Image (cartoon, rainbow, N blue to C red; front, top):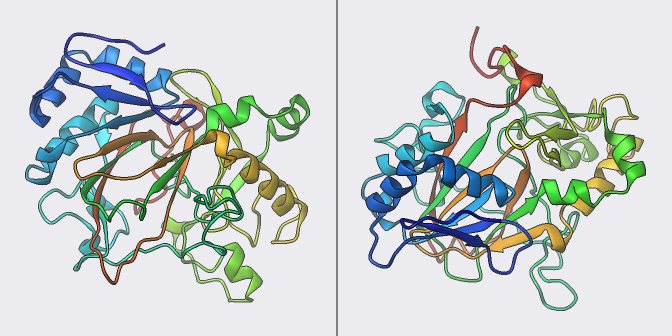
Length: 338
């Protein structure tokens, strides 16, 4: 299933139903590892797509001192690595030397982003909750844009202690394949209405009666297909978020009864509960130097809680654009000023 070559091997991700681990010969440093995959890009990308578009690369420690290496690796996945200065991202959350890197951290000057703990904090058998709606926060990066991005690379510069701040990933290809034929027919042409967080259009804000905030032209809610066909592999995948990146005023699903108690909401709950069933989910417990590559076109993810009063956490992310698929051909970027 996964290609192998002398400079690197891609093996199935332990404990997961999807994903791969990139292994290099002992003693291979970060720059040599990147050079190895650059020398065999077709094989590397083939392994990525065979793994349902999720790879783990461990021991990439040199990225912490040379952040440009993260951008260099990102360029293997597409022609454009996003410059966050061109977005509405606050400058304090952008790497001061490499503007293609988003800093996700509770360490100043970054804006602290710490997820709440689920209630209850564990499953009945003492495990980590992963399934929606027990677990909230499931999303794919920047789904509120058209065209939405292709791929993200996420690097652990300073992770939280083990057992905290895991990142959960779910396989949209596997989840779609497991749907009944009747459900596949039902959702074949449906669209979700996606909107950026913090505009008082989330499920929680609508239920609380909070007035929606005015939206600029760059923040217009965007319709996206519920079933998205991957432009490289041709495989269909679920393409959805849940409470925080869907528009619960006019949606969450276009053409269905809107609002938190409408038919669209009920179907979204059913689909998201299926999508995040433990059989489709991998929970990554971070080590320093871990680097994860995930495809926003066919995976979703969710962060978990950590004790931000006691521990520092600093993660870096790049976002790659360039091949959203024929549905978006020729579209102007919705998030850029006219």
